[in-house]
Amino acid sequence: MNKILIILAVILLVFIAGTFIYARYINPSDTPKPPADQLTVEKEGIQVAVESIERAGGQTVIKLVMDNHVYSLGEFAVKNFSSLNGVRPSDYKIEGDQVGGHHLEADLIFSGELSGKLVVGLKDDLQFEFDIE
View 1 (spheres, rainbow, N blue to C red):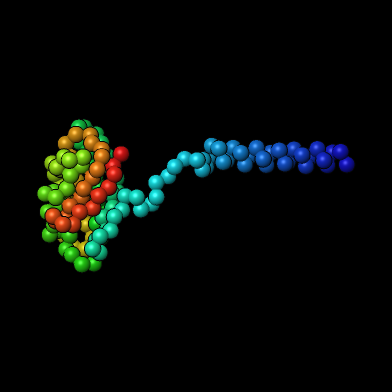
View 2 (spheres, rainbow, N blue to C red):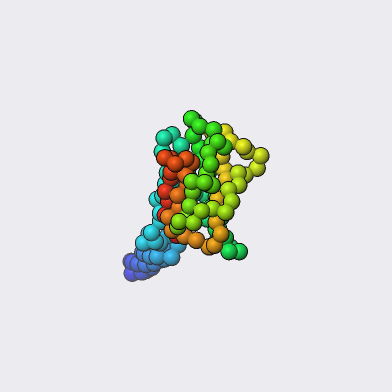
């Protein structure tokens, strides 16, 4: 009878220790995670998402994905209406052979390794704002 109690106690301790280790080190629930849509904004039927941010070599490259079912996205002067922390982009490159359409992937390139308020402007009265850290 004592052996069974000892075995059950050991199993219970191993289970509790395993749960603690998992919660503390493998799946830390106290680590804040940004909401999935934090870097996605939708206005007037257009969705703009920041897919990635790369800072290297004295520049910041922000990869954008834009989707909609209304406009041809290649018609917008994104470079002219966008900024990051008040700095205008040095370049705007549409990826691949895309020239427009309803789905577009592009890079906004800024001189300097920047952070702050990102404004992705498609036209003067259609702008998408993000906080870039």
